Image 1 (spheres, one colour):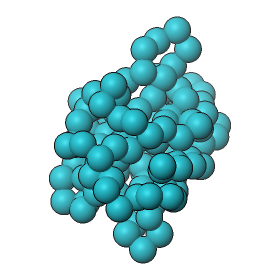
Image 2 (tube, rainbow, N blue to C red):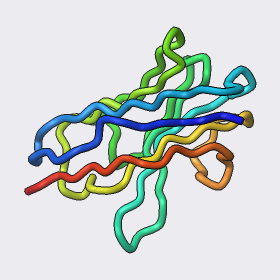
Image 3 (cartoon, rainbow, N blue to C red):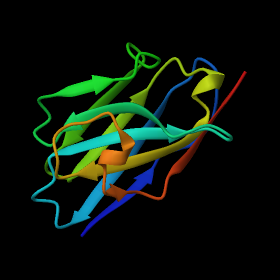
Length: 123
């Protein structure tokens, strides 16, 4: 099993920045892809960013391109999401996800999930 723990959420004004962290533990060796998804109240869970376990491949939702950056720290078995120029519409619970399958933007493809961290952007 793989355990994922997110941290770094909070309240920030529009235009501000936050950095989310996701620490992976357990049987992480077969993991091939890790991603960030978010879910706002009354909305479906949506893709934000994804990175391969090697860190060589990344992809972003159009809504966050140029503002968010996903990265990996191999030594710490961790993944990060640097969020800049935050907007009120970025407000959501952000989830870290991981899977042994190929890199994917579809949340249904991920078997391991963290508990989520709340990000609130005030206008």
